Image (cartoon, rainbow over all chains, first blue to last red; front, side, top):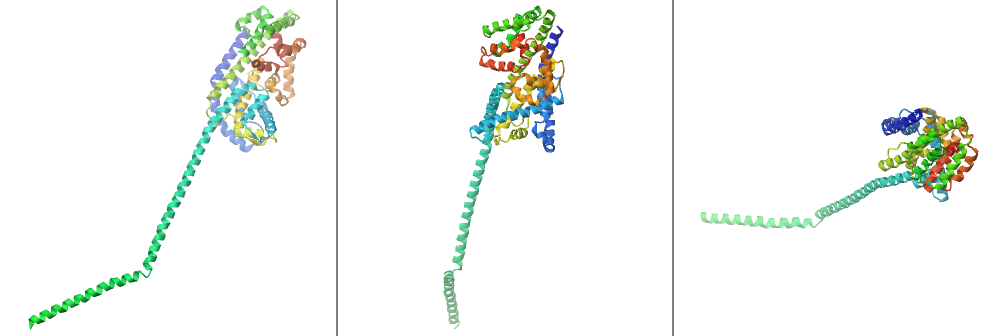
Length: 221
Length: 237
């Protein structure tokens, strides 16, 4: 009876803990770890062979009871196991790519390798995950294309501006031509024409004045 | 459903080999057997023959231990089912692929450690991040099962060694775990495995392979992944 009672307590504790506490811890640790991760990347290349122990530890805590503890050597062992898992799957995926004369390992190759190596339970969740990733990334790729379209429109406008400049240049040339016309000899005859009408007028005026003087002299006599 | 049906076979086995204590445990694990009748009959027969040679006190002790162990294994199976179910639910909710629980650059470096690897698409490390998280969770869950078996609250290196030894798909990790931790697991298993090792071990593959459906192959894989523990599991069934 004592044993049964003990067993009954554990599952309840596990369920309760996994539902609440780990989530809070996860959200808290995430922020802290980002800084640590950057520091580790900068200072220690040896650790590049493993995933960060803080990330690994945080994930491990998700499936143990809240009052459970994880020794450091256990975390380090899992670090090694994960790197081995990545190399194991990558090797299988790489072999497949080589057989098929392809150079790039893609998501489907990874899932195929995981299937081949016996991790059947992983396959359906990962296929769903990859499908979702492609959908979302596809949407993201649409935005850069729009930006490219806008850039093309901008370049087109620039070309239009250049055309406008050319149009401006032409009137300038026209004005220059007009200037040339002004300086050309045909303008001189215009001056002559202007002076001729003036001379006859002045002569006629002088004649009229002389006639008036004669009239006055006649009356005087 | 098939997997649940399979997990209920051990319960019937215990009842069949039956002391009053075993019969008393039946109400805690109610359910109908959906497996093929032939395999059930075979299993019951084998268990009876195994139970008879044991002495009275020794038999009771082993029976009590088998009962506890069987409950623990059943608990582990339930936890694994719950785990995979939650994985589906979590992935269905994923909308952001920028915040990963594992750094993509580091994953890419580990992939590139293999000289044969030339180019890696952007999606590969993303898939690996998720796969590695599931791997860590499964390995930890199976390891914690061993921690609880030993009445401890701290997950230790030898718990991971035990999980690796018991699980087929983790065979590629055997070289990573020091021999000391493996010895602990082997030594811990020998006493329980001594008596039923010969007959049941030989019969196990024959009994289990033919009647299982595709969906139960995974379950078979799980059981086959526990070569050292097979005798106990088999005896219980």
